[in-house]
Image 1 (cartoon, rainbow, N blue to C red):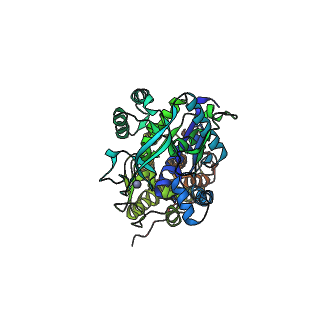
Image 2 (image 1 turned 60 degrees about the vertical axis):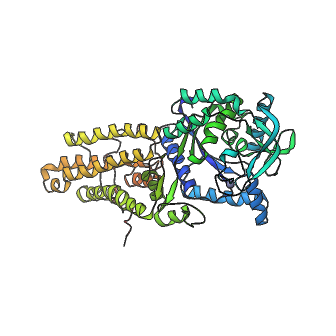
Image 3 (image 1 turned 90 degrees about the vertical axis):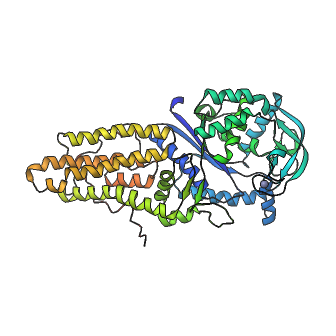
Length: 511
Ligand SMILES: [Zn+2]
């Protein structure tokens, strides 16, 4: 597989001191859609997700539960993995920061950067928030309290290893300026640019105040602290630095998809670590927005945390996958509401795509006993439909390469509307009454079912079960979701038997 046809996408590793919620599901689904789409376009895709399992919070939570940190992690990791299975997430690897392969890479990274003189031992003193495991500068505090959680902070001093981040300020600035797509969306890029311009401080990357972490090489008193450990997962999963099976050379650099709250770590810390190690920077860091629930911020205390398992059980996996990526432009904040979800299911899924499939297969069964006829010469209505498909498929490709998932779905739905409009314009029921129009009716039915075949392939990255189900109805191979070649008009074979489809998405009663 040539380098140009590989694609590497990552979710953040999720912290095990948290349970999977809709925000995790959202990030992971976005990565899944782009991974599936790239595969359909012939790419060899590596898709990484995983869990961040170290740190003081995990150590403390485990202690409170009377278990070891690893026991806690093992328990929570299963919940993440089960959710990804339930959501049909097609990741190719799942990394845990407690795995040997990860610890090894982190220590090798540490040694390499230390040998270069960019890691040094010093003393760290600042205002520390224990629950957040974060040091804050005097100016960052809000009324003396942690700006993140509002709790009391304490002045803390400890010996610490530092990463010479300040040294890479200009190099990072230049990279961001030279690569306009490196940080997306643009508003986020501007935030990072001004942050870097304010000046980068050296970064404390070890702690002696707790022990649940990866020991610093040659100084076991220290554990390597949060981001130097966590961010390295993106290359430890590729077997760096040994790269015995060539994964690093094949797949790196990655596209990192993250929530906007961790952008600074991905767009500033991580690139400077990589610069110090002499490695290429990520291809792209895309920071998406946050979800509110029924207009309110999601929080444990409000008891409004949306539990993805429950949603899938109620509405079905594809409806949830569709809703999350359709409702809000990727990169902006969005609101999750049950009304909006039910509305999308009834209008976009049950009505638009559901009706197109059920009407078309029903007519084929009524007029041709379910046997697909060969099309005859296309008239201008047919040609307009065929042309619209080829133009729109190009647009969808552009949208997906820009991670504009909602725009890609809007474009796919334009094709679905075009199919429904084609039925209205050609009025097959009228053609069926006139024996002389038999050839015309054959052409119309072929074009309709052919539209549905291409639509099925296009929706498959978003709604894999639905895409496969439709292909099965059409007598196509549901395991072959390739778009390259198969997105050309005329793929359905005349003579195929197609059964009348049952409703794909039953309407949800809103009463
Ligand atoms: Zn805090």
